[in-house]
Length: 430
Ligand code: MEV
Image 1 (cartoon, rainbow, N blue to C red):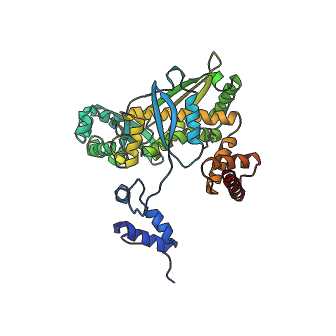
Image 2: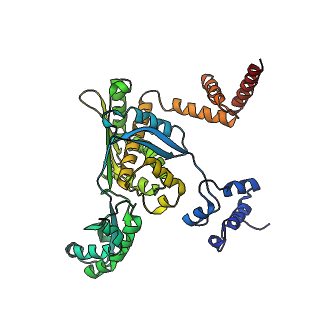
Image 3: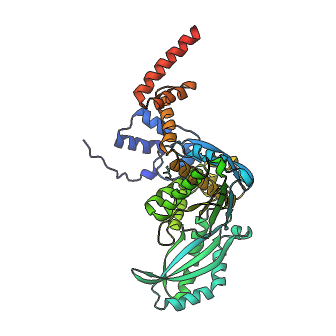
């Protein structure tokens, strides 16, 4: 018997079906499993094959829409793609109690991304830093030559910053190119510019440039979202106090802050996936920003105002685009943007900040009152009921019985489906 090997020369050059055959042989995939991978849904194989390398199929996720969102006085239906139950329901419920006074407010600082250029081997870095800053206009002009379209739209490289950073390998100059990327996520434009200006930086400093890449700590591209939730809409001041105490826990303890921020990201990333954003960039930016003081902190705050109402705010980097990248290639991402109706990347960032804040509120409210499991159980029970063959009204009936009896089990669900279906048939014929 031949040894299994993952070394397949030229794998990337094969067509999808041949690649799949190789994988099937390696992993013992059945005919059914192979055809499931190849089954074309709303992302055709041809498009998938140009999006990434070594494609052997596609994978579908649930695409849902959160209702009730009123942001900056405008109504939005928010597309969300996520594998976790309860998230969409929680977002919709939270948004419902956030509709007063024009809803959630959300603003961005502007679509400024940072390109980093690392300069090594400079003996007098502080002096050379001055020379870099002095050559700002020349550096910007050279950067902007790379992207006349962006410049024509009013974007492009706008500023140059330079720091001397102490590293384990000694001091290095780190140059920041600040680029207004307009409606793009910006990685391509920024990386191209950073690479293009590096010979000039080398000439100015006499040093050697090494890395030339965007920073995902996009702290010049922040979204700020805030909301007032009236105490009477959420069960009174006791609930308000509970949510504030839950936030204080996160503010005091990084173990809790990580989970608190995970709740925010449940909303943010679900929208990012639906609109085909670089969600890893958003995650990286969020957590780096949360730790910017040297301590990992919650991205949101929750306080009680002078009238006893709950007021919340969120501030985080939000590097998203509506042109370029997968947003324009994935057919469903295009539809997601149409459902959202956003006109600019800034507007998309505003929606995502608002969703993150609402999602965070929903989690804290549940945690500070009935706990998170009750809602989860309901959905879990419904899922089990569906898996056991329940359809239509039977889904809720079977789920309800299982929850009431504390027996959320597949076999029991099957028993119930059979029993209730039989009774239903009997009723019909009676
Ligand atoms: C679960 O996906 C998210 C929560 O853990 C967030 C939180 O604890 O705040 C509920």
